[in-house]
Amino acid sequence: MFTELQNRFGEQFQLNDSLARYTVARLGGTASGILRVKTRDDFIWAIRWAYAQNINWWILGGGANVLAHDHGFDGLVIVNQVRGSDIDTQTGTVTAQAGASLSTLTRHCVQQGLKGLEWGASVPGTVGGAVVNNAGAHSGDMAGNLTTATVYDLQNDEQQQWALANFAYDYRYSVLKGQHGRYVVLDGTLQLEPNHDPDTLKAQVNQFIEHRKRTQPPGASLGSMFKNPPDDYAGRLIEAAGLKGHQIGGVQISPRHANFFVNVGNGTASDYMALIALAQQTVYDQFGVALELEIERLA
Image (cartoon, rainbow, N blue to C red; front, side):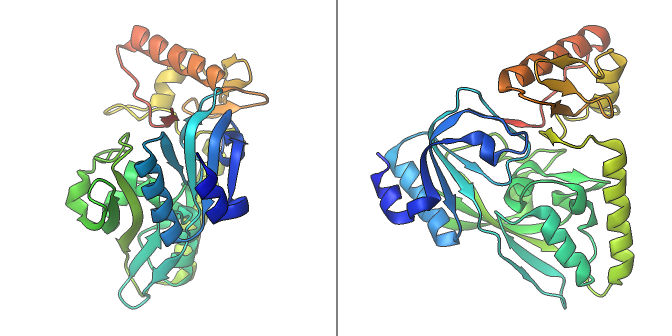
């Protein structure tokens, strides 16, 4: 099935490769095939190929906020490593490819005196993932920066320019979240404020990073496990339910922040799923709040 990929991409394509190599939490069984794409043309070619073959396929960026199953993935995983960006320091317009690291892009913008993306310095993952999930931190989010994005429509085989309103953004939500198979984000264009003092912006970034180190656990986690419910915090509810520090197998609800589940050694996706179910059921039983996952499951 994958002969064409092997011929075109060589060592960038691997049969029966481990997903754990490409996920932040170091989890996941074997995928039938994993392809690393490094150019936009190759990215489009690969998703068109997968779509035409009518096989299961999935796109990974930085591997954050994704729970890959122990049984692996029966299909093709495309790892987007298209990372270029175009920064206009005069207008503050920034266009970044979907595979670009959000934290790296933030640092580049700050160094050039562009204000508005400082929140992104403490957020793992890629620009594409941030656009799809409306990633955010420190009272900032993608909805506050994005102006347009290039989205590839597989059904119509065309690239489309989506305005901000097309994404119907809400808290950690867009119309693309959880939807796989038709639309793929290729890049995002952000509007930032030019002509600011880089040292002042760097100081703000350092504060955000220090806050993250102080309040969030190091190591292999998926990021925030649950969305914060209205007027409350998922971590507070999990801690109040008596689950902070609770461990199943090799995965622990962090003693530092209860909305982070950490792979403390030889953790499995099954361990994660058991902890997720326990947290959801216990919080619901005690407080009547249904916790909604912020992460996605690669299935």
